[in-house]
Length: 197
Image (cartoon, rainbow, N blue to C red; front, side):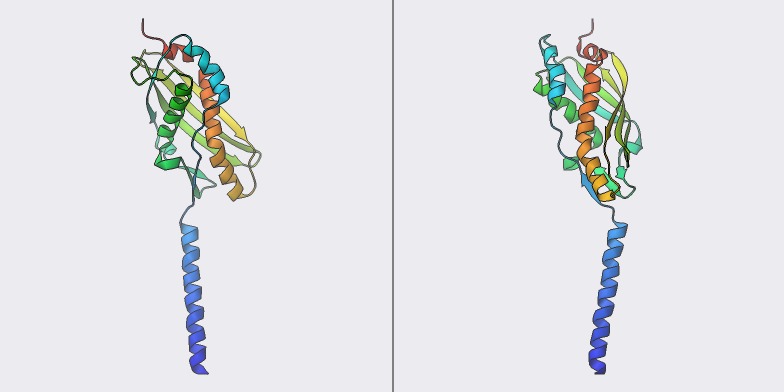
């Protein structure tokens, strides 16, 4: 009888300690939520395609983060929200601009004109009733034209952290579509594409 009690005690202790180890791992290791790839927006294309009639062609240079706070965005403190395929936020945003310009026949790597961006801040809030993404950037052209832009995209969030973090990831590409829309509808955008006089 004592032998069976010892076996039972051993199994119980193993379960408890292993269980605690699993729980410790879950608590100490933050989850990572990857966002979807960027898709071209029909609304943005409606604004960009008329510009191709003016024979504009532009290259897209590096998008530069100006602060370390953009390196890791968190959802509800624990979950890291990251771009897909090991991209940085800056390279993800750069690729989005390239996709939009390519779809409208405005992009050319051989162009004499290149546009760049300085990313001052990317901010994501999942607060229930006040969830949004915001971008603070400066667009710069090799022709010396530039302008500052702040764009905000609001979306419904959830009281549940799991749902809120999923929504945060899913809305980042949509927020980026709005950023590009806000950028290209600005009259100054056309000046970025023009050759220096």
